[in-house]
Image (cartoon, rainbow, N blue to C red; front, side, top):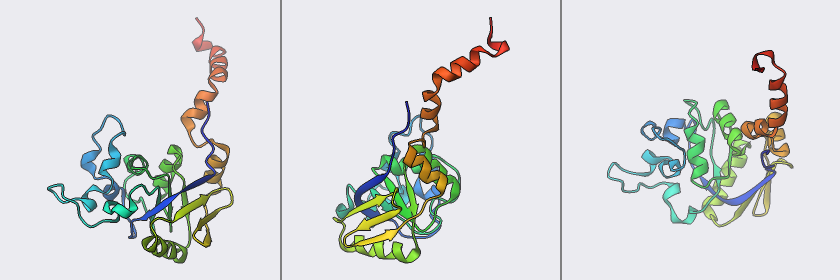
Length: 200
């Protein structure tokens, strides 16, 4: 058993503008009391998207033209704040399959990688142009090519970047540490059987 290689991600885009969007805004703390992550997607940016009575606010994620989008576009230092894993879980379970932004908080980025949710950074100018393009044409497909380190949309392409370790994990399919561990089950058993304190 091993992780799936993730080299490209394609889909329509949706943006959430603003710098320093922290994990508490991504998923409010009151929704962290869950046994599984399965239903977290419906609480993504809940307080920014809904009033106390549950009625929707004006927000890109509530707009019909962005329904089904799978590429999230963000600005600087996205995912800062606490290290809660629930934030990337909520994003992924809402249907997002890749995030492109100016920069990301380090722990948030590591949590995303461990789930198989690729992040890619681009210059502020390129992100601004991409957001503007998506606002004008929400139906346009975006292609994130992790191998080529390139993002293509319409007639444009921009350079994207990941850390070498992150890119290697997606290229080789080693991003899921649990899967990697399970793939070595026989070797683990063999080693364990040789340990004195595991005998008889």
